[in-house]
Length: 245
Image (cartoon, rainbow, N blue to C red; front, side, top):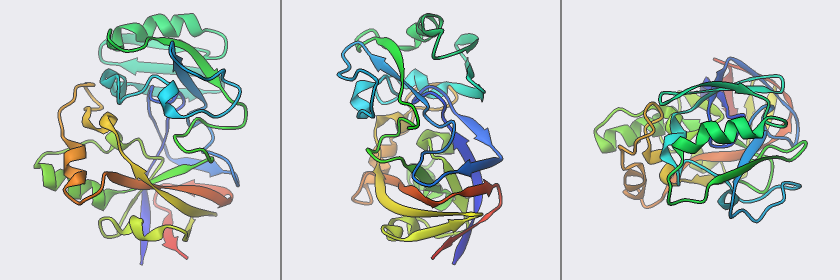
């Protein structure tokens, strides 16, 4: 069986916006170019920004649901952010941190550690995994969650990199250790993705409005999508074929 690529997404600043793409070029052993290049360390973070660190060090949607409603656009070293409750902001994360911290402050809960600084690890996107990963998500599994909850959901809740159509729901969980050919690339599936409260927030409003975790747990797991590593680089385009090797 084979599927078809239906969506390509990157998130320039971890947990702070999403951007749809029509083409990506992957490199072996690396995260998606432009994906989670930066992360926002909070005031209680135990990282100096020189190496990869776990997500607990960063401001993120599981603790601050309003962040889920940010759209982003990456243009070179400049990022433009949009949110329904804030004016648009274009800035350079490496050199203009204060303007970003002022912009994001109203979106952060007052009972959580405040965002303190933007960090960047050269050559390594700040994925949730301790290895450079690409996330893959199945639209059939997304529709299964919608059906379980009885409500329409934006797929942007899951913050996946590569979305695919044409394969059975939860089929991706059988791919652990397998290689996938997508366009010119080969990816090796390594882990299922355990989900958090970020997915309960509506990506249009930033309000928690769906018990996605309860729906997942009805299948005796809290997982959605899989993490893979790039074995062979190349281009992936919308409508490319995904094949399990």
